[in-house]
Image 1 (cartoon, rainbow, N blue to C red):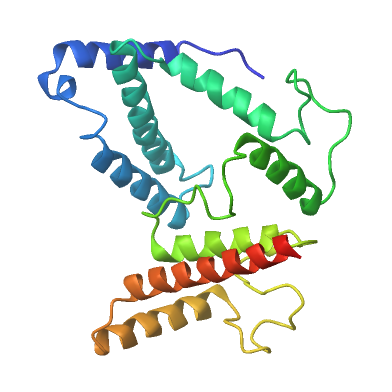
Image 2 (cartoon, one colour):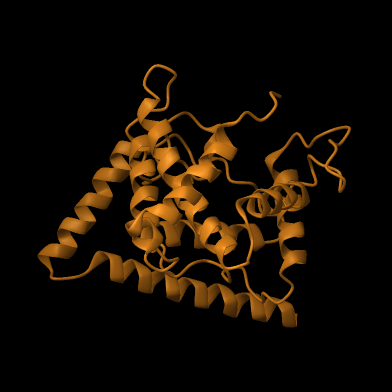
Length: 245
């Protein structure tokens, strides 16, 4: 691994100088930066979704990553000016968290383990156990999920957390499947069980649902968000009954 170059210290210096000499940058607050953070995150996601990730066309990706990094540096700088933490503290916190959460890779002192799990199930069990120990105050699998997530993302994460809390739950298998194919474990070939089949077919079905909702004067985002709420409530009720058994 190459030694750290001068780019990061220079970036921190540039941001500090902007805060001192640029009236607009000096007026920024944690609260006023929220809209920019969301915008930059969406722009980064859009660049990745557009496929600008290969070595020949990654310049746009580099630029969007830089914009997101700028947001992190700005928030850290605001804290440093108030006598709080610095960017160095943020980086140190992240490294420690990665080591702590990924004990299947690292020993507590940060050195590598002698061997590593060969299945996703082992990795998920290890990661989830550490995360649960860090937050003993959380009484259910859905605590910590931001309510402001888009409904589709909230639905996917809720389903995944419910799956992972089930005894003997298998690891998610999408990463091991062919690109573009979405198939629940244990089903037949794509499309033969009434499922969405390919990613393109799934997208078309979702678009049809949104079109039908609009025709009926319904808000699909709100409808799905409320459905997720009902699903989470049922899961928590079932979990409560299991705990009493």
